Image (cartoon, helix red, strand yellow):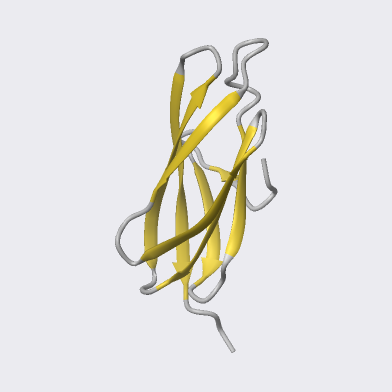
Length: 102
């Protein structure tokens, strides 16, 4: 997982970004994948005010280009993956958007 992901006490991840950033967020799913299974598809969910652009799927990771964000705040970004084994996993992270200081 990217070093931008900071593990929180509750076990979820937090990322901080500036409002105008458009960044790629790659999630490594290998810790949750059963042996021999690969990701076959990925669906990202973002709340209103957050833009999701291109997405990509690799055998054990997913990437989404997120941003810009309209308003400062904390946003839950969800990703649901389907596996070659037929299973699905749904995980997410909090994206904290802040105005960039000059």
